[in-house]
Length: 451
Ligand SMILES: Cc1ncc(COP(=O)(O)O)c(C=O)c1O
Image (cartoon, rainbow, N blue to C red; front, side, top):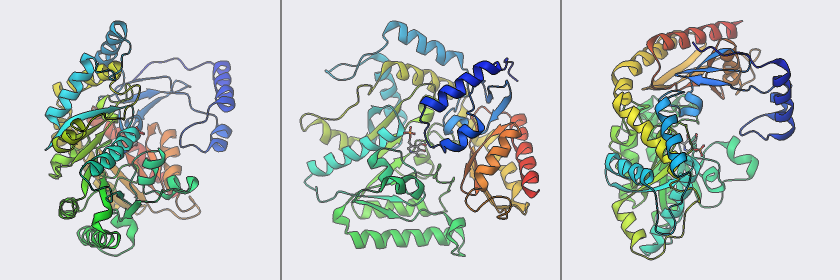
């Protein structure tokens, strides 16, 4: 447990007032937030955060699915401070770069699955996917196939918040307010059996999704389709797991129709599923893979787009590559990434998830299946979801998850509410005792929802 003094009332009131007057928050209902008063997080260590009133909160979401090694790791802080003191910034333009940047690229190229050989750096997952989209367009053009410009992505997918990456995202609450998707972004079904109402089991629904995807490819014409974006486990859309055989079949469809396969591993890379990369788990051999979040465990922003040798060769031998951010390959987040990767390796956190805390966590999730309030409980490694079946008097349809997450916070744990489900994705360093505490708090939440 952390010890921290609560903020004094005057300071908290001032911060809340300033926040209300000046800060436009991401993905927030501002009116509701300011009515309740913004939370001001103070500090963190391991899996525990301390809030503005000095309360310990067990973080069952690893920040935003990203703090894989837990909060307060001195070794990352020191690596960042050292790099800042030595060279606070230099870019990777002008035929130049820096040592930490080179070393992260080399680490990723060596460890990444299959044919992925070259690394382009970004500041976020959205930028990694945006960069993938531009690389895809450039590559199709270079090989004389500019007609292949459409992009396939799945319902309930989440790929980011730029205009193009929102267009990729298959969640109407993200696209509708902005009149997106743009033309050329085509939806195929995500394998969300529970919500489909189809009455099929997972495998049969997965097979239906594959058939439907093939119908979409035929309707649009394979000669117009450049790429397909796939999160191996769909995260922000509700922790949707791929049914047996589904991802392999999807991959095969792309191969057969000359469609690039992009694995969006922004959540799934760096150990959450018990392996370094989910693409290895399902033998996806992606043409492009995007990562962010767990690459630095959120200590600093860093994302990357990894491309196959074939794509890299085309980009590197056809003149000027006219794409890049000021901070592409920034040395300070790169130093954070190296220290973070060293911890993940030394403590074998992917292995720990696979053989120890992952199974322990999944047993707890599975035990909830018999609860009448639980429509489905699912998960893999250290990610999971609990689908709630609550009556409209308890929560309006589509809001039970948010209500449950608010109750969970009162019970001392942070989880995410999505529609009518609770999503959980704790730091990979979580202990058995903390997992017990997390699920004991969720049991109290279910009791409170029962009324
Ligand atoms: C699978 C996936 N892709 C892309 C993104 C976007 O990343 P960012 O928020 O860093 O832009 C996210 C963020 O949650 C994500 O989960």
